[in-house]
Image (cartoon, rainbow, N blue to C red; front, side, top):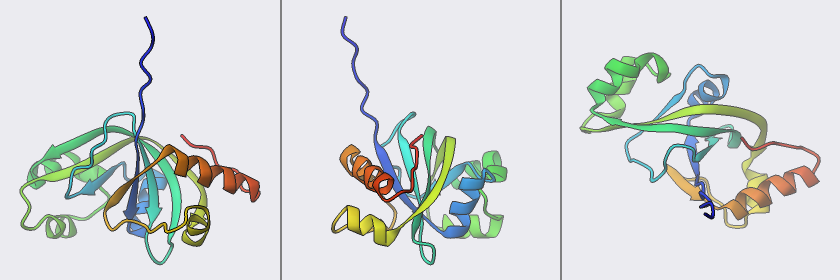
Length: 155
């Protein structure tokens, strides 16, 4: 019987620098969202720190997507979210569902700046929330980065 090849998705998420740093350092392993991305266990996340850093800081592998009420998310996972209670409930004010992207493996890399990304992938713009990135875009970004002398390994 032939094996079915699983095609993994790459979710490019823009994260405020303080939260991106917490993800990369391991002080936080659940990234909060208001909109559920169409990803599954084993797919990859590209962690992009928004302004003023404007750079990809690392990659992660999705362990699972957590979907519950904001209260349940806080009660069960607050010590893994990297946010204080006031800011958390302010973020979810008016929402009845909280989404958590739980990351299993997080690999920091030498930062890949926005200007470099735009040179490699013309018309590239970091997302407001998230966007999906193709295998071709990932390969191009990493191969161009290696050519420029900075090697990075994908998870």
